[in-house]
Amino acid sequence: MKVTFLISFILLASSLSVSATEEKEKLEFGYVGSIGPANWHLLSEESKVCLTGKNQSPIDITSQDLKTLAKPPPAEFKNAKDVESFNNGNTVEIFSGKEGVPLPATIQVDGETYDLQQFHFHTPSEHRVNGKHFDIEQHLVFTTKDEKVSVVAVFYDVGKEESKFMAPIVKDLPKEKDDKKKIEEIDLSGLLTDIKNITAAFTYSGSLTTPPCTEGVTWYVNKDAQVVSLDQFLGLREVTGFNSRFTQLRSNDTTKEKHVKKRSLYKFDRFLK
Image (cartoon, rainbow, N blue to C red; front, top):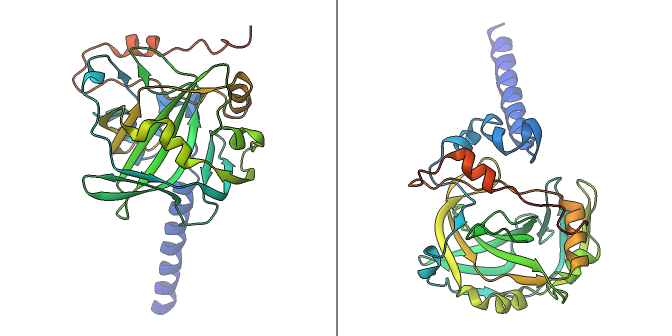
């Protein structure tokens, strides 16, 4: 009887453990309503830092910040072939299509190698420069083997020319949640050239801009926007919708939160008139 009880207890504990893991994996968030940014700290224990953190992202980057640009991290980007784009319900994410296999791009931060796990898009931009939003912000998410994170951010604004880099991505976007699409090749080396080898970027220590808002992320935010066509922008935005976290207070910022939130509003009907 004791043995039976012990086995039952172990199975119950195992079941609870699996349930907890599944629950963590099922954590869902969004950008409006009860699962929007104002309530992310309520989604899980780990997400409390979304409210209590002192170094949260995104931020408004000022002219004063841009006087001292980052020492560019050594980078090597190779073109990625046979990759996948994935609609996770909040953005379009580009990854190798193979579990545990990064995209062919690396950066060196403090002597450590960071591999490109995926990149995705926000419309409008999450970071701002002197209070200005951009039409798109791309996040290239790099990690080390011990899970340190660094993100390279690239801005895009609508112009007259198409973006060569964005062309294969927006050609056939996954429009429904959990949809995937194959992409023959992504011009990552061309992107690195476009952003001048990350030589004109502002760096700071911030956080993930999605739950659980983990801090300790090294950011490189490129100050110069790339150009996309109107059709490219509208095609991407049709899928992503509005998916940007509002600007966060810096730890030494005494500005009232309500003022920051008010300034973070974006005229999203800019191209619908």
